[in-house]
Image (cartoon, rainbow, N blue to C red; front, side, top):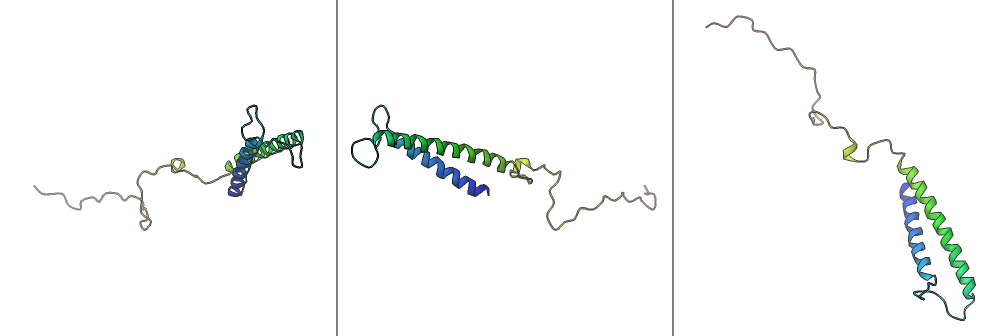
Length: 110
């Protein structure tokens, strides 16, 4: 789910960049102005403005959804989130309870 949302989020971000670059700016830049075509200049400007607003709303929605989805992890996702152990054990060893030290059966002679 998170991967699908992330891909949609990236596609929306690229689309926003494209639509913003198509809009006519004060200096002309990459604007689609000019005469001819099926849309008037005002109609194209309205369409691009509404498209930008719709993409911005979709971008915000996917951002919020990604924030909720990323907060639902139950297992640690980073090595820094895992508590450290005192002594690492290999998978084949099973820790056992400590045994009491053995007492000498006879006193040591000097």
